[in-house]
Length: 312
Image (cartoon, rainbow, N blue to C red; front, side, top):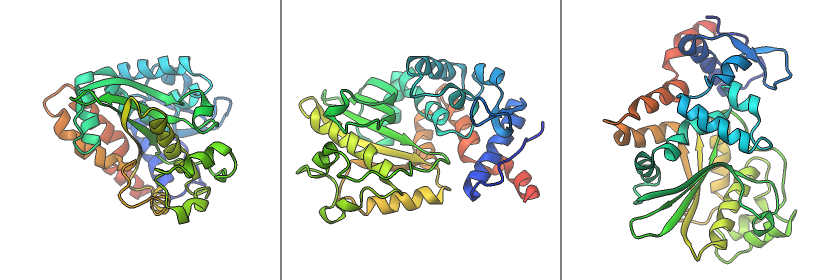
């Protein structure tokens, strides 16, 4: 199967990941490439599925994950573009479903996965898992369209409630639109909060294009926790990214320099790190194959390395 056209203007990491997704489509799924990245585009790329194969759910690691993703897209079509979700193998949106859907599908494994992700925090019950989640009403939070890619609310054995909000990145950059902390009164409200996690001498830098989206995600998680402290004991934002993405790494480093020492409200997790944490959890269960397939698709690029080297 032909790996299909690549995009000549990709940066190094994006080119490598696009090539690997093209390999996965051709060698594992054994289907032709399709048009994209938008549904109306005519040019084909190796990382795109055609509409028929996208509708079959081939962008997901199992039919069950596909069904969950498609149901959520129907619920929220404004926030989840169907073609991007079903046909773009390079998008972080289907990756988010592929990675976190088991938390919504199997409570026992979900509790163990969340606990391992959060350094062993005891988790006794998954209360809800929501994809593309924006708390409402907006004016209780940031007053804008900021949303989490995934949101997991859970209970510990003592009955306390916590959450982890999740932002996923594969090759996409953070939004390059600058938002000053003075752009909205609600931004300033949370930045100036007495328990805000940002250093006072770095707060004016939070609007930087490099990591402004990351700050707004973190601020939304902080606002959600502060607004519901009567029932939520702890809340955090987890960024989930690929370890090979140097631009994302630089953005994370710059953003964390704005955080107060000891802040636990922002977590940086790579895909490889999550896979390492989760292997002992899924060993001996029916979910082992899911994690192995996730690693093949997104983490371990060795299977396509020889072809990549020959191309280069």
